[in-house]
Length: 579
Image 1 (cartoon, one colour):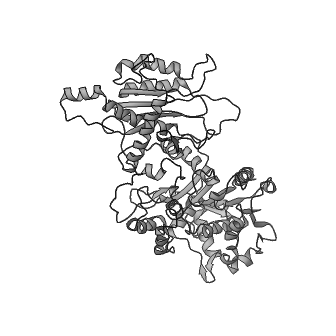
Image 2 (cartoon, one colour):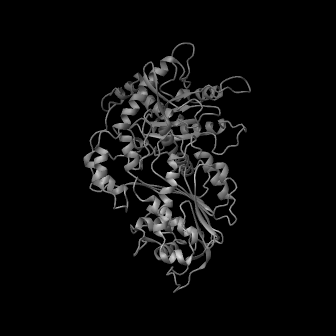
Image 3 (tube, helix red, strand yellow):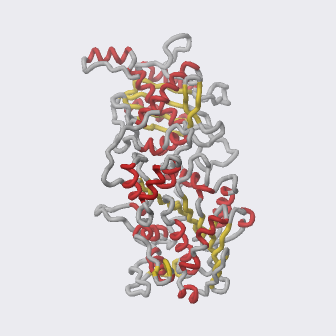
């Protein structure tokens, strides 16, 4: 494996951020929501909660912005903007204390819309902002898949409630259930007993460490029950907030599924259902070296200045701790499993901002077809610089009903291919038809379209897919053929090295990034190729195959006799053989 080249360490490392908390305006200042109940939450927590006796609760600026955004409301409907949320931070950031203050506010605080603030209101809330009232029957759940996880939060409540809060709200502190107002309101700890949870109507649920919520410990079932209970809340304003460290890809945790759902929404592949996601992560280029660790930790810890950077640095440099674990725990990076082809942060480190194909560019196209189960993709690669750009991806939409057939829309794909030939100058176009059968005539699903593409565009292509034997074809490149498997395997290794050495640019496509992260190494007779984690996996890799294929095809074109002859005739520069 080739290590990336050494890079200069910037004086200030800029973290990778997700969420409105990190938006800045033209003046460089953080943007705050225009209308939020969060102002009253800030006032109430400072009055009724404490760090310790005599020290009133005060959020850090980062935590205060989080609070304002989490409680943001729609000024027309006076309903919360977010249906559920995720707070992802590095280990030790203070997720449990922040979560406990929000839970306390939901428990006995003015957490539901009650009116509009006027000048000089007793809470000091800015005029025009919403004012809250107490929930008439608050039922707050602290949920986790083990008692140890719920205990981390539940043990905080006896210390954070002030004497005034305990007396005024008549709070009865218990270890697993805390009551207020003679039982009218309660906070309870719940663990992985989905059947016992079914049917409840909590007003707020806080889900702890969802990177540990797995199929094996009923985490998925528990998450589904909580979602159903929240949906049927009486006022329609019950919400869930999850906290998590960076999860381990491939474990299929609730945290992983939620991040994938968020990214699918950002990519436009799924509907926006009101998911609030906030994360502060190390940038892709950050290295686990002495020079990089300290500035990276200062960036990733945010306002949690209580974290001892020198101690964390020692842990990261300790050879007994795997690098992947250090990246997850301390850099808050979602790091690939050991058999992963590439880590997402390695892909993100390649230049990808402000780079795009332009009309008239000479390109090559690689197509990977499927019928229904896998994705179908089309990727272009520019001849001049090797830039990779996603032209299209088609896969079963999220939430598609079980048992209802779905097929890749061939006419739509054909339209995108036609547009590519109209906008750019493709010099080669390879298409792998896949193995899906067309029920109508028994042929493979894509054979007819690939034949049509060859007839339509074949004369324009400088490199044909098959040039010898009885199976001559301008476009058809069936990857099941043994020699092609060897060629593609060599291309996989070259692609990997190009990424690590930052010799590749791409368009920043979220779907391509997702497929790159899903790809797993698969050993064969010539080395290793890429594939899904297992045959039935829903995690698609087809765009990654297309990207590797497109880069491979570019080298094939530039090493071809036709390209060498073209370069010689034009007399520009010298012919460079790409290996």
